Amino acid sequence: MITISGQAVCGGIAFGKLYHIKKSVGMIERRHIDDVENEILRMNNAREEAKSQLGALYEKALLEVGQDNAMIFEIHQMMLDDLDYVESIEGIIRDQKLNAETAVANTADTMADMFASMDDSYMQARAADVKDISERVISILSGATSGGIDSDEPVIIGAEDLAPSETVQLDKSKILAFITEKGSSNSHTSILARTMNIPAVINAQGIMDDSLNGKDMIVDGFTGEIFIEPDPDTNARLLEKLKKVNEQKELLNKLKGVKPVTKDGQSIMLYANIGSMEDVPSVWANDGMGIGLFRSEFIYLSKDTYPTEDEQFGIYKSVAQNMLGKRVIIRTLDIGADKQVDYFDMPKEENPAMGVRAIRICLNRPEVFKTQLRALYRASAFGKIAIMFPMITSLSEVKRIKEICKEVTDELDKENIPYNKDIELGIMIETPAAAVISDILAAEVDFFSIGTNDLTQYTLAIDRQNSEAAKFCDIHHRAVLRLIKMVVDNSHKHGIWTGICGELGGDLELTETFLAMGVDELSVSPGLILPIKQKVLNTDLTGRKDELLSDI
Ligand code: PEP
Ligand code: MG
Image: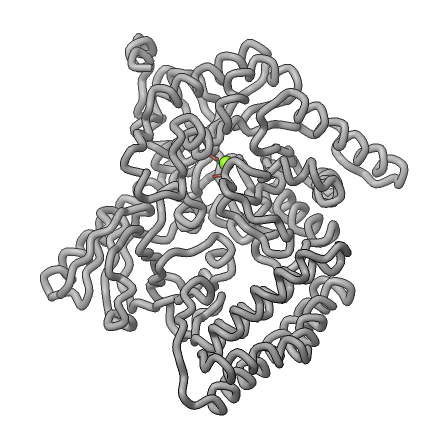
């Protein structure tokens, strides 16, 4: 038996076989080859396979999103046959005797640079397309699985690291656990694992060793231990632990329907964070009182092109209807930083976490923003939708957002399209700037939701994606807790409520502190709702508030 110790990011125990997911890009091995003709044949076969994959995608898109949106896949098929493209790849293989993967990657880089430098914006946008088709060919050549899990039975996923866009495309019914060699606990992939309630371990050195692929193992998502080909004692011990975990779950299930109120009578709303409409059943299964954060960007991340207004409307309407009148807070598009979407064709940034991300992209591209807002407002006629805006730093941003919302509702009025005229508009407080001016911002909105993941990264100047810097991160740092208290106090002074939707909201060590601060709502991964409820029910704040807040 081999044991690997990593960092636990989502509790749970999984027994199964390891399935390596290899990255298609960024790991291209540059090799010299002798058999040129064979290499060209490999490349042409991969091109044919890519075209047939695109054909299947075209058919699927045609049914789901209509011809206009499906056309991109036809264009990609044609690009794969483009003479300049094919000749350039063949030329590199023949003249430089390099492997097909390298030849495709080099051609993609050269052509993408050429497109990007053109004046015509249509041609500039082709840079992303040439990269996209080339990534598909490279992943076929290198046998990497991009999105699919080619196994009949559910598996334990092993990867060097996973981007959010890769994680959302995986078939969740086939995943028993996630293990990555890199990563950080507040990265969106860890957050997604928690949302899906799948055991997950990061920083597991050695898990990508080829010899481990397909091996039986046990993942302990509580301790971060991975037991490869476990001996009988370990097997029995972990089976026993799994039994206890299931018993504890049964106990927690008994809390369903019980209102989260402390012994001294203080109540709090316990909501769920979700990333897709498929997560709604687990909100019900865990007794969520509403949805406190629907990360709408995952709709964009799981697609190859912009989701249309109707498509988004369908999703938001379905979530609102399925929540039967409970509040559903949908956050507008928050891409950029680690959540990159190729078809947005964003220029590469030196420091993307501080670059043009989230609301900045929406304010730069009002047409994209308005499409989403129209879908949200239209869906608000079918349930209790609230809209929330990410990455706010200033009053002028909030004012501009409200102007754009007004333009959208004026249009809907003209078109006689119904929507909820009293829809709640809220903002995320996830930058120190927003926290510090929360007294001013409170006058403009209906609620605040504190995004502690970004608030921590920006307050402590620690990149949430950087596993090396993570050791300098005190997740209970006073600076962050003080800002949270300040935001709650300011919101209450102005008669609005404050929730926490960052990962700190699910930290049981802080539940009492948040209650003492008067936080009105905690929005957490569905699987954490009942454990927090248990904590709330066991808490008595009588005479303890000052003591609980004395360290802040
Ligand atoms: C946050 O920053 O805390 C948050 C909830 O948003 P995200 O994790 O999606 O950036
Ligand atoms: Mg955030």
